[in-house]
Image 1 (spheres, one colour):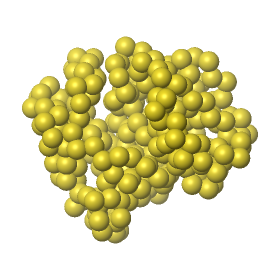
Image 2 (cartoon, one colour):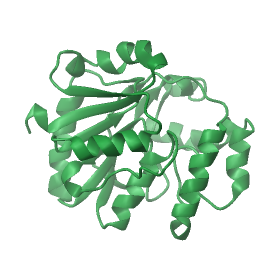
Image 3 (cartoon, rainbow, N blue to C red):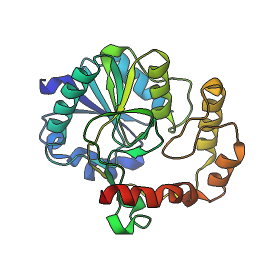
Image 4 (cartoon, rainbow, N blue to C red):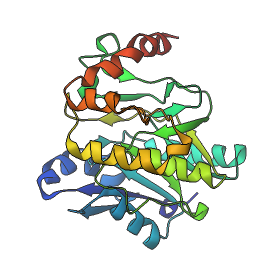
Amino acid sequence: MSTNQIHVYTCARSSDAARLQNDLSSSPEIADGTFGLTVLWNKPSASIAYSEAVDTASSDILVFAHCDVYFPEQWFKRLEWEVERLSSMDPNWAVAGVSSISSTGQVVGRIFDTSLEPLFKKTLGVFGKALKEPVPIVSADELVLIIRRKSGVSFDRWLPGFHLYGTDIVLEAEKRGYGCYGLDMPLIHNAKAQLRLGPDYVQAHEYMVRKWRTRLPVRTTCVPLTTNKLICHMRVCGCAIRLSSNNQHTLRTELRT
């Protein structure tokens, strides 16, 4: 696979410029120009920005990443290998994630997240299940999404804000009969701790519940998609740690095995 077959996109506000420069833009294979990066500035929603990116892209593998993600040395070389392996396993795949929820409900794919370091002290902020091979998933965290452009799967422009578009595109691919997989692609997420969710998350959550009502419930890395509004309300009211804590012991055990 040639390097021009992979391209990276990120959404950023003007206030994110320093973070973008320190993290995503400093990733070695982006900084040296081996792989291209397009910054989508001050867009009204991630889904609008990324659907436009898909429409105008020429590369086959599109990587959508948060601007506070750092890809370590050789990460993209590993991605090329993973894409080739996945394409051999399932020529009909469309979406892959690096921190995802498997069909059995496990968090799969290891990452280091600075915002979760206080929660996962024994692993120093590393969490997620190591994988020997790609596994089917039902949702993916938006910190990094990998889309196979020729599948024709894209983002829903009507999904408001900057949340849950990872889960949405997985479900869109699933509905069309494409495969979605979790990969083990360790990276660094220099996120800020977020102890509660804002009204923008509630808006996105409500949209997703309406859209996918017949598919619910769906587990995500944040709040499950369900018609039970209490679960989302708890997170908005400041009970943000609770959901993650339920999986904490399991994740720590998985990292030790």
